[in-house]
Length: 416
Image 1 (cartoon, rainbow, N blue to C red):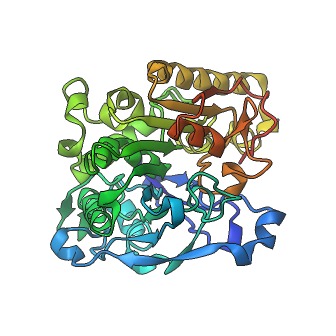
Image 2: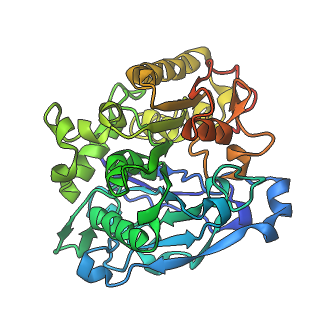
């Protein structure tokens, strides 16, 4: 099977940020990650450009000595905006998405982007959605200390190895550890409340690192975790194959990640299975919230109906315009949704956990104001995403929201 590259592409950006195109090599299948940040552009966003808070990049000091480096060996980094008032001792740490690299070629490509080198990272980025500092856009977390950790290791912050021949560093784990150490020294040690969140590949990382985040803070600190679009499902594609399973196998083997995977999972399953959230979430001890689109647009377009799964292109019209899907294609998507709902069955029964599964064709919904907390944001049972997450974190009400199947939800911001 072809090697798979999953790299970031923004789909219709706010602030007209550059689009990171993906080079498609002869020997690999292109995997595209809609990272969620600035996915939607609306008239409201355009009119409020000047109001968006831009936050500077902090590079980790002594990064080489701490092995906290990107794929190319450059220092990893993060963006930090301090809290104030009632939020001065509360911390939100958000992990950026950006996919995985699974072989020399795909990692070499990533090295030439912000997902493999801090040399290519923006010096300042907009803090929107769950990172916004405006109460009208982010009522529960706007005045917290907010951090966005940049993603440049290609392995969901799980690797700690190198490929000397290819001059590649797989240091996701030391990056995570170093960022946490710096934040703790800078005040997070005394946090009264903490939320670890992440989008896409960062959403998967939030699941992996959730209990570690909790253990880094005092036992008296209220700590919870949020995974946005990180619930990647081990599902059969339209050809009957499992392309995402193969990608995970390649990533784990190429980056030598096995030893960093959770032992309680490895005692039951093989390493590839332990990269799938469905086999991890029930063992996470810290309260966890799963936010996902039931028809995740990335999984549909780049896994379930990828070029390798659909070489003739018979699904192309459907997967880029849902209105063009025939009855059998819709049935396939409905079965995928049912599979996802079933996998969340035991998880949602745990009182401490939260779920928001809407029937949208989308991917990442926390980082954009339009999907997080605008008046027209996606909602289930008349509850918007930001409200559902806030109610769960502060224990103000119900935290289990599973939408009815497509096409019942008219509040979606569909990407296809």
